Length: 325
Image 1 (tube, rainbow, N blue to C red):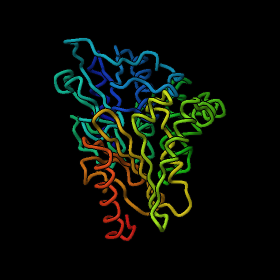
Image 2: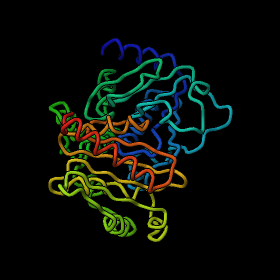
Image 3: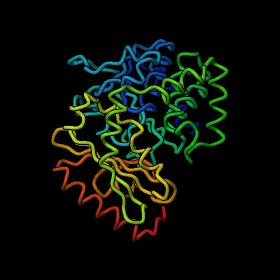
């Protein structure tokens, strides 16, 4: 990994401008890692823009530097570097710009095991989160982590580890958390904002979605669907659905949870597993991907058709694998 750090260090040293990009439909890890890198590189003296095609979900807008995130890029703007965070494939950066045309060099920082290594420099490792990789990079470059960077990295860390509940949590994860606390992170304040604050629309859309809940006779698979009508009725946004699939997965005996979400002419399908099934393998069968316990895919089709096809594949996969990862 030292060679990768040296390559990144050399690229940063020779660059004057950088664009940091999160993946589409960003989560806490993507936003926190992006913001932390933006602050870090700005303090290093680079001219930095950070960009998210879908903006910053309301729940993360309190994080330092979130107010500077762009949702549009200037026409004909070019950068010395493009740094992608938490995106396993270059397509995950969105379709509103062409990465290869906008930057001279692409640095790909990600912890997904199915990353396609699309960067000129690829820093890919199966850590708890992309935030952990950004943290390692900053430490390797011997840069002091201030409170603003620490808050972004901490939120990224807890959201991708489920507040240290998921199996991707390691000794290194806790060591990083200790260091971030030393930098000034106030854990109660941040965790309250992330886990104990929800909009009224969010609560109502949870209730409506859970009313559609279905389970197999043996309760090992459970799924729910959120239609456009449900979203419109409760004036809900996509970020209001964060945590819904985890509620479904928490049901006793459920091994695989699935959330179908209608979005224009597309259906977004999220998968979660509890302890045995590799849902990224299921997602890949439809052109998606992700983690072993959390994955997703977007399919252009009718909701009823997608549900039928996806559920059939899930049942087939579970029977063939006998729940083995």
